Length: 265
Length: 265
Image (cartoon, each protein chain N blue to C red):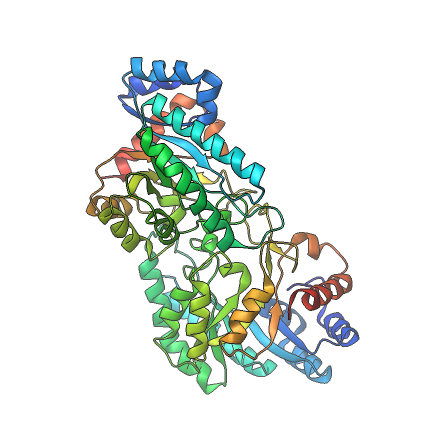
């Protein structure tokens, strides 16, 4: 998504040129290019798919909507397996229209995970609950902290459900370093993502994820926490940013790779 | 600030008409109308000033800037005393330009409070650290949760330093109800403010505080927490909202009073 202006073949080619061997994918561009075609493309290009984004949106109250969400999440698991990635990132969903019940919404996420966790396991996929910044609590994800994400994940085996550690969402939280240690001790850090915190936030706040090094977050500090917690997996850079999307995709990918080298250990 | 389009005399008159006897004031409009003139106006109108907003911005590193901030905060204490309010709300400050050190910034807040707390006590004013929503952590306030605010406040006597409980900033936090109990047990709930959470957030996010009843927050639930914690003081409604500011101030005040009655116990 960082360079969504690139087509799948352009992305594969740009990765090859830059020596990037891992890529995190989102479902929509995969579906646009075709699931099997994408699987073949990344395989032929020697790219490892680190994660698939995103499942989730488990908070509906209406039974028909809940069934539909579970069906869609089973498809997401299938897609992850086809792409050869072991990790499906979950954005769990916000409050249903008119509801003010955060606790109830979080419990409905747990209900969905009790169905989806075993299904994912059967397909060799781990689910990674992503706590989203509290500014998304009403409209996107009622799981706002690593603490909440782990409270949910720990109801299930670690090889079914873990968490996504994303600097953008947790950097403000002085409890997050201890929660990363908790996640690592339980083998529940299923992916680690970077974006920087820049202000002013844009209208709607979704597309404000800043380029590495442009903002308030010390990337090495957070890398240190996840590595001290035993995480040895890939580090993803995930930027949603209208300014970056308006530029040449290869140039943005090159810049991002340079920033990654400059700001991580 | 909810009806900043009204002049001080218009505000006093509108409060009289609506039977509102308490008002929270901000420093800028007070200074515009004049401190002594405002004190006389509210006194003559029989209005009690519940709080003065705001002191704070303690996070500068530069010694000259720190001295300037402390001087300004002493003036804010003086103004609060002149207006007859016992509570000065503190917005503690964000990260200095180029800094990524949240911990250091929080420690500089504690340093400032060690000077300002005794000064406030001498003037019969209590300081109320306001945790601001984590989306303000870099540019406005590195104190993002009630937990963090109480960790700071509890270094000082409760009659010097407590907290502001504001639904808008903490509604997403499942640890906040227990922290309200902690604050109440220590006599540190110095004010309780309401605003609703509405989306999409506007650019810059500052002026997105929603009218009571328009958003995701159950006001009675939070009122229940503060009252169960022993709080018996006034409840303030504080809205920053460009749409509300564009309307007739008396109409907005009337609507806000109606919403308050409809959504609180």
